[in-house]
Length: 353
Ligand code: KG4
Ligand code: ZN
Image (tube, rainbow, N blue to C red; front, side):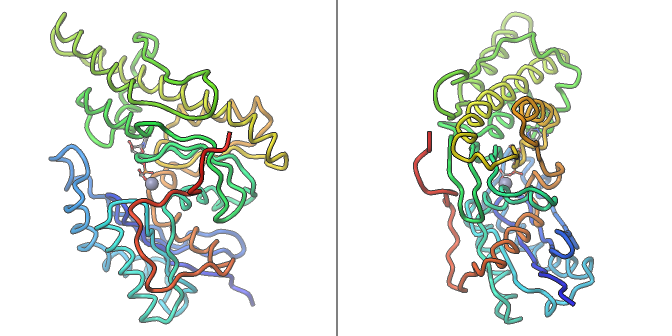
């Protein structure tokens, strides 16, 4: 009987150590998906400290691999490949994950697969059955904001990208200004629940302009300005002020993302008439209001909207294992001399429209 493929994936590109085992028969199946967040280690510094991240990955990785194999009731010999995120990301962490994967691959005589972390986000939607290429992808994470036409594994065409901060960074920096802690996205989402999103008029940079690029740096400046003005007039922000500002930030970011995505749908339609889905991926795609807005947009345009469950939007091992499995199917394996790549653009080329 054909049991399909079974791949172990390792994610260590930022501040989560994650290991997963994913299979593909009869359909994509996550057999184990473990994650250890380093939030507590980085919290005192208000952001991710690369050296601390690398050491924490090193402390955790062996134990997580052992536990993932146990959770999946799998022996190393039963795996068909070992995959690791090889970039883009923080070099120390990438080396830890990549070396652990190469060591396993060498010891067990299995293929090693160097996965692009962005491609893993892009392919995570295909863990759900029925998401076929080509699709339009809004990839929104802490380091990247991109619109891409995904035509196949390794075949991604960039339609737009951020000219400055990523959407996740805009959430994180605004949250820091509001004293909401890190990571900022979930904190803003929570605070916004009791807020009036229309109280503050924040900028929507590039909204309505030609092309599909994004810009978010003006937003952070505006939030800082509003907070400083209020502080000067009436003293420190109260909880309702913080909630209203959080809601206004969330709305401004969603408006910008939706506007640019709508623009790219027209282009995608012309160039990929066979495409039927709008996919959202990356940590920011965990945001519920953004998901509702994108679902409504897709509906208006006659596209299906697909976003992985929130825990598969933020960094995780299953997306690395799955991207490895998709590459393995196509024979795209790597040598043990494959480098880690702190910068590794998905399409390497110029923006399309
Ligand atoms: O994909 P990811 O886990 O890591 C990177 O590859 O960057 O994305 C992390 C980013 C952070 O900026 C975080 O604040 C944001 O995703 N994020 C969210 C939410 N959950 C995570 N942003 C808005 N709403 C959320 N619920
Ligand atoms: Zn990510």
